Amino acid sequence: MQFEPLDHSDFHYLKEFEPPGWGDLVPRFRYCIDSSFCHPIKLKAVDTTVAIGTTILHKDSAWLASIIVHPDHRTKGYGNKITQQLVDSIDMDRYTTIFLDATAFGYPVYKKMGFQHEATYAHLKAAANITGVQFSKNIIGYQPKYLEQVLQLDKNISCEDRQDIIMENISTAKLYLGNNQVEGFYMASLGNGLILAANDTAGIELMKCRIENNCYGIMPEENTAAIAFLQEAGLEQFRISRRMFIGRKREWKAKRIYNRISGQLG
Image (cartoon, rainbow, N blue to C red; front, side):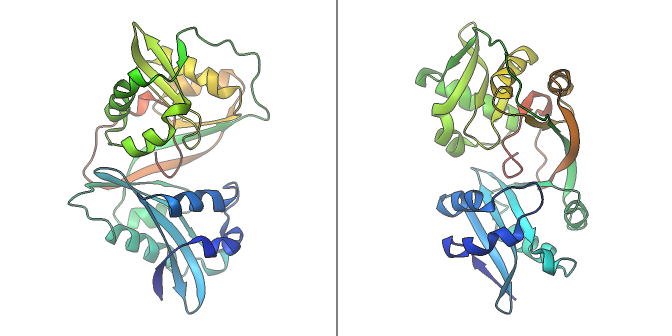
């Protein structure tokens, strides 16, 4: 067995790895390959790629993402091996916490490896997008003068320094202002559409912006206000996933996440 970097030449077989409901893997791995802070790898047994995955590095934290074993090679320990390789590749003196979002299939593997369960994400969906939503006048398009407030709000809620990925998507942000202060933001281009807010009023109003074009939502179960809003709009919970970590525990604010980025970034 050997580990190698995953590159563009691997795209032709990614369809074979696609878990149900994940959609096309090529865009997510293209992003990881082209990004300076992601490091995707593959595990080969003889001449066959049997598992894939990536690390995503922020300033002092990291995420493991898209860890997938080929359907023909499951229950052979390859999931454990590639996960351990990804963990071993991270300097935990610098990146003091490693996170991942575990599916029901992966959860037992990660638990045995020492990852701790710290939150559960609720996944909700509806048959169609919600229309006729009225938007708050407190919501504006992004303006550069609010950059530092957006970055600080993200740090306060996530307890991570995610400046690089925030800056990549800042131009798409919608901001909720209260007394000329940023109380929340929604970034449509960042993963599944990140929504963070300092209070429920800002969070729910930003969710209204998102729900018009998205018939699903994913947020921590602790955010009961966000879940109640989606349920009242007609969405139903259809599954969960579990946020897990090893290393330093961080006091992030689950109740202030009104839609997460994705399984790759929390």
